[in-house]
Length: 390
Image (cartoon, rainbow, N blue to C red; front, side, top):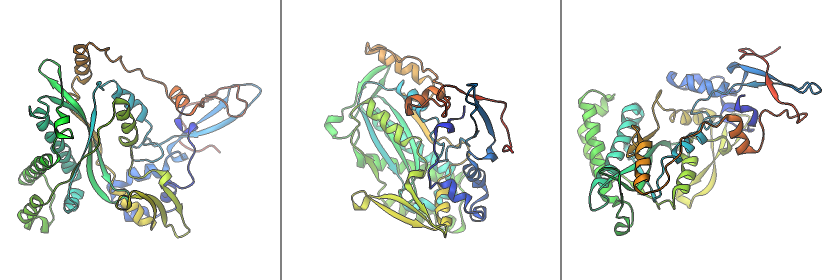
């Protein structure tokens, strides 16, 4: 059964705004229309539906369940696979501290990145991972290959375009034949020295970006092409901010973080507070310049949709990536080999939990139970329907 049986629509949603803005396609790029249309039609008759009825002969209750769009950008259902993904990551954690490092890019690059999102988002991933792996291999910091989970975010609290990568880095790494090496973190106060990371990261990113341009892989406007050398000099002169946050206390805190951040969309429905008669949207944001206080911002519906559209990722672009000993090729085998060296129990294989059981664990509600009689089970009557019932 579709998980939407266990979900209540909120009063103010992005979907509602799209449905109340019939001309939104006139103000957005054609490449975004497919995704925005899915969000607009999520759990409506346009997505198709299944009729269900209670199998208790004395009840007779029936209902219609409309299908979700399952798009990763949709605030209604973008998190549908979050729990399953987190459980899979649990099978890859080792008993060590984990560190949180954030790599940002100067706002002077926003226009170029917006026009070249696929290649420059990849460059952001590559440069941040290269920096962490380079410092990890250095004997004075670790002398081993750490494990890295990297997550791309492109937004700020006000829906501004702010590309950055959140990295979870193990406080140790693998050397040789699955030998575990602890990081020398106590000496430096953080996993690796921040200013040194900033310099290596900046140099790698700009070198890679310049190579992309030489190979004709960047789309540049006339001004960017003419002033390329001057722009590079300006970017080299800037400080590229790397945040080295406080380490997580242990694997459990890593999992909590993953649950909050890995499957986030640009804005969740609960942050949207109202849509007035003129179509203006009020939403909540944290003002980090004012000690993280929560404030309200009002935007026209057109501007709100424009800002949201900035954060739609290129088709099939992977926003969560793994590096070091967590690289995709046989990473579970490597983790279990390290656990065996430590003489610790190995991780058990991941079990696929049915949606019904998962929702019962999360909400305490059996999504198949009849909400009227509480005795029968809701049973699907026939195959998927593509039009609403009469």
